Length: 199
Image 1: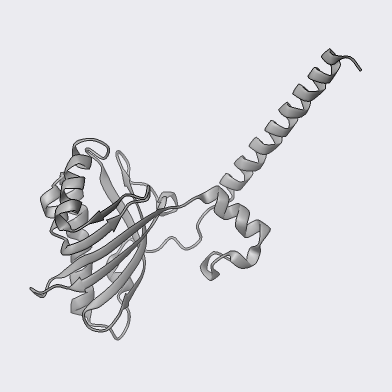
Image 2: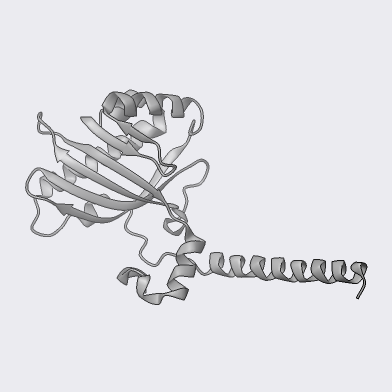
């Protein structure tokens, strides 16, 4: 076999492998829908037996956060966090304290997320005693039409506390980007890794 034939065979093999990998990626992406999308009404996840007033106050904090984002109001956004609150973005940036969160968002509202809005759905609210709660949900920022619940690309965890003035504020926020193709691959390769809600 001459060099030209070997080179053509190698190119053909590479092309077939690339097409196969592309087709596999497209299949995984197309079949990676989330089954548990959550509810768009935060009050729907207030647990039975919990203080309805506290649950509604927590939801109001999230509503205020969303409204501040839509206005690009970094000061109002920052006020939804405790003085020593933390904020971890999906790219791994970690802000410490209300002032850091506020100033980081002041810059973001002028640039990367200017004129965007927040979309969210809520999965679960759990109270840890009378003065702390964890709220989990799905979310994303957007422009134009609001994304559907299945299009929200981030999983978000809010740890909220009753602050010294009695208001519920966010003590810690963590935002994780969903890697839908990797998630789907792992569920196919090892089905037991899928959360119960996604089986």
